[in-house]
Image (cartoon, rainbow, N blue to C red; front, side, top):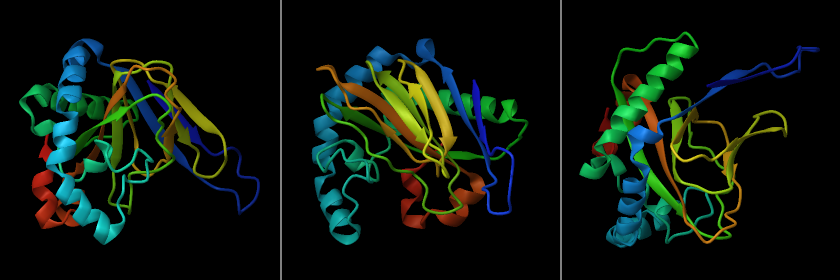
Length: 226
């Protein structure tokens, strides 16, 4: 499904002019969400501990913290610059799903792209009373698309912010749902109300020119070609 957001009538030369799309589809059967849930929870603490020194160095240098999400320094999210979930054998099937969703997104808005795609991917684990603060994944106009996959969710939504007005598009988190959106779109989540973990997989996509021109050479091996 495509959700399209665009300006109303331009009533004066100072009104904003914009149009962007958000894509949603459900890949419940293909994603094997129960297996992903078990894998992520099993490896959560190990990944956090393995990259503690890398996190400390980056945070001291840039004040990275957790990418503005509010999940804190001891979250999987805070380790997203250091591990790529797609490098594990248990997650190889996700690459095909992300590429399929990307291609379907472009097809539905009449765009074509035949080059390579590169992805960085991580997991988010949230517990009762936690939420993700408003943030975006983009830092410049080389950024392309971002997305997330609902692995284990209950009673929460992800909220996408109109860049010019205060109105929101609230998307209910449903297990198996994949969402793609322009990386610059700011978004946040509802607070987790229950004891069960809210688990999602998040990712950024780069097209080939963006990857070649904008990703530092020493960071290129962090990205996976799909």
